[in-house]
Image 1 (cartoon, helix red, strand yellow):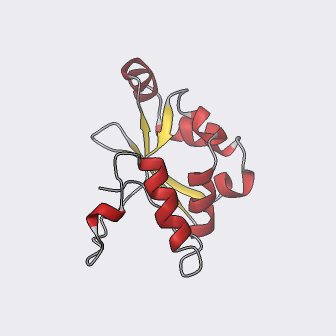
Image 2 (cartoon, rainbow, N blue to C red; image 1 turned 90 degrees about the vertical axis):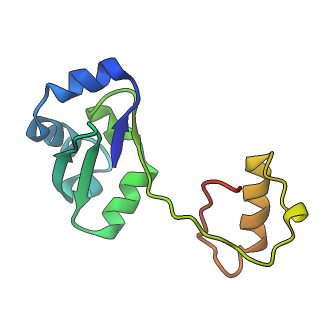
Length: 123
């Protein structure tokens, strides 16, 4: 999913066809990932849904930002997140007022079991 945060840019992009945007995206880096985009759909929310041929291409596009300039300067990848409840944890052991520190602590403590663990938010 791609969202454009600035309203004026969103309206400008809305005036362009998805085929034109897709052609501009395919000219950007990373070429291997942008060439693997199958479909670009404009959603009623004015966000864009990007469908790729492979999961590796999707992951590569989520990690890079060069190709987002084909949309607008304020375009961002809107990642899908899932809520995970961890039972049996002492609440006082996790300080969620400092998100960066809490995320890093949990990631470090689980790095051997889940080396690619990504945490968006701790509450």
